Length: 232
Image (cartoon, rainbow, N blue to C red; front, side):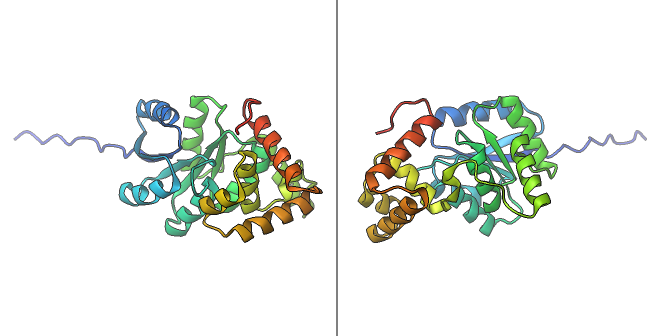
């Protein structure tokens, strides 16, 4: 009597969820991931508010998050996700300077930080490394963190903005986009008085005398990050 043939077990694909407010970018990443045999995109969202319920429904293995999102920013989303899903792997894909943001993302719970200027192959390999248990960041940041560990203290800040808290940096960026205090308060669900307090703290930390100087510095910072075009 002929024996029954048993089929080989099908390898489980890594399920990836994308959070970015640029549909074309999400589409391009999804297409690139779609041709890989070991991973697949299981969902997408354009904001933190949209991402939370969608992730609860799709239950991905990896979430790739942009830092600049409408409403709650990427750092806050990472914190929220880690509070609900401790084993979830979260990676940041951002245009923002790694030296300023990567360590903040790692402290929030991310396992990787990839610049949007990187190639698609770099992103794919970074996902595989994260799934294998590696922390994926640039060599420069690795050397800096190892130096801090060896010396037992933090190195001198490479940017004056490193002295800002995550919330202050978020408000700083919104000031650079010419948002008024009332608009910032509404977007972040804070009082105008709280925004004013943060602005005062930022001016003191950065050695600035007025809100006008603070707004100017914030606008210059955003222009340096992007293409040099003002965002007002």
